[in-house]
Length: 213
Image (cartoon, rainbow, N blue to C red; front, top):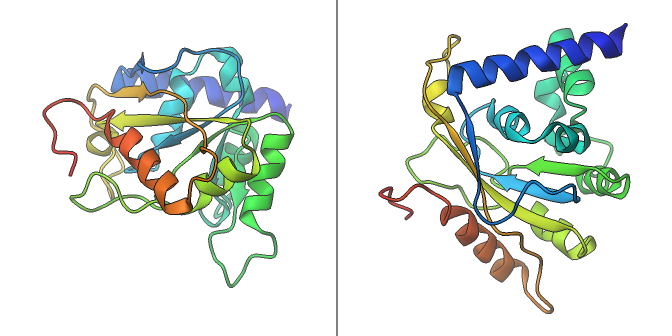
């Protein structure tokens, strides 16, 4: 019964997301092939990973798991059901003083099980005027420890206007999700160089006419 309810809930969320945003996928650098990937995206809304998940073809959707904070998604029974049962999220505890497991080990275990992932290298929602916050080390660690997995930049456009922080009712607006070219860590590439290259690849997907500074 629980898997059926999760499937129905997932379908309802997908339809709602499409209805509110009329979201369109732009496969600019890669196509929707059935290969294992780590999609890394900008983060301005709690609905970001839902929009990426929504535009994936059904076969990819079934094998793609968002990486999300357990402190948020386990805060209530409903959130826990959606995070665990509907999206099969890789839940990590962002509270360093409280967690008993290494978040990177949890992420790598999901990759080793064959999952593709949706991650947000900024680590938290960007509420500033800058297009991106500084990247955390997570995607570098993935690229270093699992060098055979492609990392694909994904730019989510306009969702922060659909679901502004503190608002309960979404504002219907058109959104796009743009997928860039896959990248991997180059031999000898340092953490700083790789993160700068990943950040530049993500910024390059911003719509023309917006300041990428």
